Length: 276
Ligand code: DGL
Image 1 (cartoon, rainbow, N blue to C red):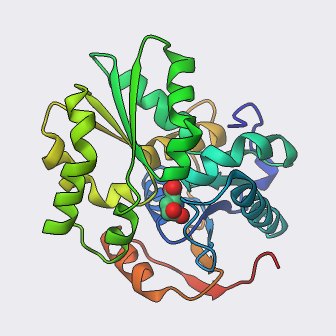
Image 2 (cartoon, helix red, strand yellow):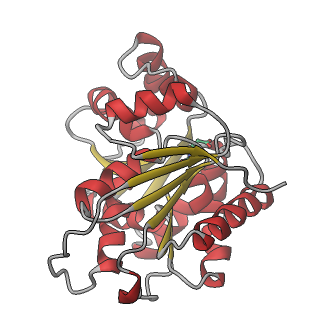
């Protein structure tokens, strides 16, 4: 994360640019809305090329660069990579090449997990690409090398969530299977390392039990964005709060599910081509 670059105060009326491989990043938008209610948000969901979770670092970096270029051209004062896969695979190499801060979800989530654990055993669930990159493991170990990290890829959760199966037997069965090795490892903290997982928070909480603290990377990313916009923690002036959404292909079904579940109001929705 390029946390050292302050957000230019001249840009205060400009939107925060947020991108994701698809619709799931609206969980980060919902967290930003709660944390920074007076900000304009320009969201780009790359619905034409979703999912990123099984793609190579080169492809995810190319997609993330194309989208970040577009958001900067649209006047974004900072870019938030809501997508965990893009945060893991692309943000480290891209963050220094933009004139505005580029914030990912990995470091804020890792920091919150290290703060939350009492027994030093943290679990991470995410897409295959995020788990293979070991981005969360590295970020957690950089903060506390004594912590043990158990990570499990959960590739079937994204499609189940996109079908709206938030509290369904199939989802419960898959969660039990994915979470079993983490619970066996004795974790007391679990990082929800994918945009979509906050939508399953209550079911994941029930499967894990009360002893496990869930770390929502969306919430922690929003707090990191707030710290960039207001480093002193001062009360921010109420600006015009808008949510403009650009999608690279139509994706009405999950968009409406996410909008309703996250209690978001979308002010404009347009299709925009990105890349070749
Ligand atoms: N947005 C992705 C993430 O947070 C999940 C969906 C995908 O695989 O593209 O990792």
